[in-house]
Length: 203
Image (cartoon, rainbow, N blue to C red):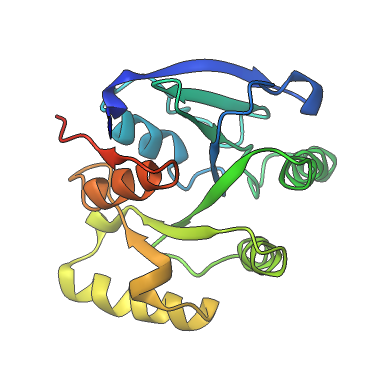
């Protein structure tokens, strides 16, 4: 079977674990800083410009957001973190929700952790990846906004980030751009493979 990502639909939101879907569909969890490009990534995967609205104010979304892909899996968007204009108390709330989610026996197949390729990972990014590794939760690092760098700069920056995060760049990282769709086919194929399917050749 081939998964058609163009059939992705908004499903709903949850402010706590009690409000999460209970149908046990596999989840691909998307995490990262508030302004790292999660909404743009979801829109690009789904081939829809307005599915996940790109807020002009990073950090505005404080809920877990679900997108259903052909009733085969959820793309689960966790609250972003690290936005300076959000109070420390609110940041703690977001962190608590993320912690609860990742330890709440949800049917998580993989975590896609987004990093802006142009910047050094934050301490929160490093902590998140260390936690995922320690808990044996499969993950990939998705380097976003790669169109902002030249090809030579991108190659060099991937090596720098891989070294900082102690990752194998050709195994653990995918370079991605919502602007020129770099890495889109690889990303769709990775997601579909988590439920034993191929990605349909679409758009």
